[in-house]
Length: 145
Image 1: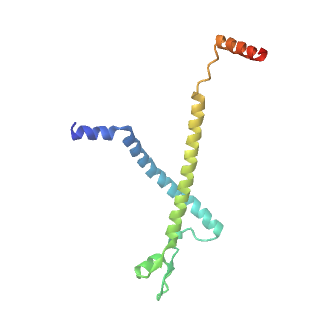
Image 2: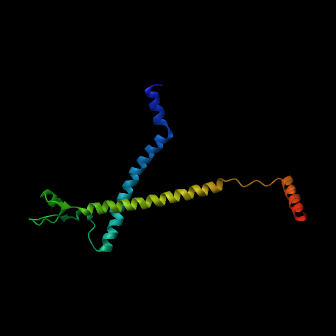
Image 3: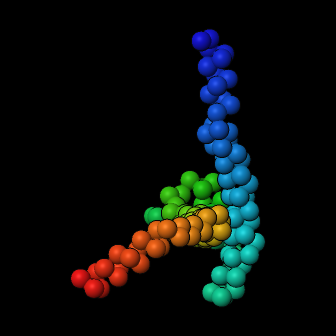
């Protein structure tokens, strides 16, 4: 088998195509969740906490801050040692929301699969009449014996 034929079999297999579709949809889904976090959730959290929406500018200067810089960009440009926890907080919230949404999607898909399997399950066939008669005779003999 030639390399081209082997590659063709590999690339056309269902698993590879499923993976490719999953990666593409996952990338798009990540953008949706990112937008939901930035545009909907974070403003609500900011409103509840009474703060600013931009958590990426939350930082702590580790050491001296001789020029009293107040923005993360200025602190980084000045070469100060900063602990920029705001961006991490935003990414963490984004991850938790993504995991929550994926959890509910998987839960919904499992429910739909179960419902579909229950619909597709054939009804048990009725017991043939001769078997029913044999069972009645057996039960009658047990009762008398």
